[in-house]
Length: 637
Image 1 (cartoon, rainbow, N blue to C red):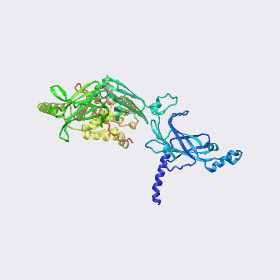
Image 2 (image 1 turned 60 degrees about the vertical axis):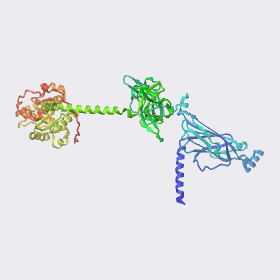
Image 3 (image 1 turned 45 degrees about the vertical axis):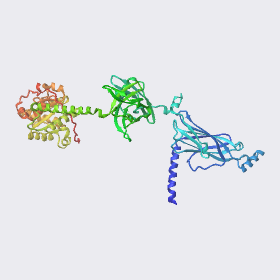
Image 4 (image 1 turned 90 degrees about the horizontal axis):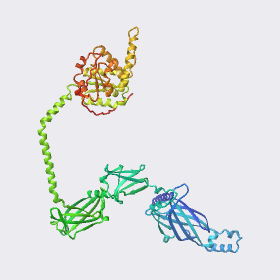
């Protein structure tokens, strides 16, 4: 027994929660007429409602109207007014007669009866919501035997604008009334002082810009928008603020919404020149067929962005450019017979039955709006030769292209070989390149990484100080630099210093401090040791050491990405005088040649300390574009 009752109990509990949830959205207020007292209203479930024998509902009237309260927005209210008949039993009648005979009798004066009335409402297809009005019938009510109850439900559940609402007393279903709530347009058109939230819908405006061949859309806030062909067509989401003018047609409508509020506008209905976009986008297909009785028929299919009204008829060729109508087969294009496909286009299909296909495989279309004749549209068999001609033309183009490439093969081969040799793309030997960045290179880190990536793609072994911060922290700047220069010695290559304006000022200050330190040499002949904060500054002492040994420019060279630094090459700081300076990206090809072939020989020949040889010859001023590929940096400890 318990197992049988358990599902029923669960269903009743769920239904009770659902009913209470619906009823929890509304606010109920009851007003009782003279003869009733202690009137209260409670929400009850719409089934198994107990009946009260003391009263009966005789008439019931209801309506939905807009209620406005102070400091709040207006909302919908359901007003139900019931006239009830009060039944007096024999005991009450005797007590009532006694009260009339002796009004001073205290017991007789307190004659009363507790009763209730249940009123329900629902909107399809939701569950009903019921309100039970409890009250006490006073002696006045017992004498009158008639009373009225007015129930006001604010924000009734599932009732919105233009909703159909059924109201009825639970004890008298024959008194059920059907009412319709006011429409949103009707409510919003009224001049009310109180705000109505639903009337404040987002708006959209459109401006046709014929110079830009587009329609510009403007709507406020973060509203969503969609476009649709015809007001009752499917709406497709649209996120751009412009629409190409060739896609705009008179039946194009715009919808914009924010939360639950939505507005629709069709602003292009009366724009005459947009009619041309409709028939330009109209397509027709014609095909042959046979009926069940082996009769012939001609199938036609029209596709257009808007529903069109007009006529369609078959025709036959009488002159080379005239298709004459075949009488008795004309069909009407009716607005209501079009159907929309998945591409939001409207499709109209038809058939001409019992037609001689030897006379006609074409149809003509007359558009009622403007009296425009379109066609003839003919069966695809008649135009098959055009596709064959197109295939032959494509084949001829392919053959001619192949012949031209064969004739120019030797010329292309010689040109590619000469460019390959002149551009130093044929690299005989590769080496190791160390890229050292000044402390202020953080703003142009992408250029440094791009240079490292380019050199690595050319076959060099590349080390960038920005990529090796962990090793520098473990070894120290100067030991890490010595280890990289050892790779340069074994594999060939150079240490490349990135030169910037701030780097030049830092090197000038370092030179002055170095000269002061030389003057203040201690008695034992040793210079005071100072730590190096980065490998760029640590390389300066090694550059001076190479100059003292007559090996200027053998291990180090300079590059810059700044034009003003390249122009001031004659006034470089003392440690950099005599080093080779390249401006990137204009001298990239010269830099690649220097790193591959001529680094050691030319470095030994450059022993004049006061002379700076710029590698930018006039022939090497062509632009060389390289992609900046930002690589992942190793974590800086």
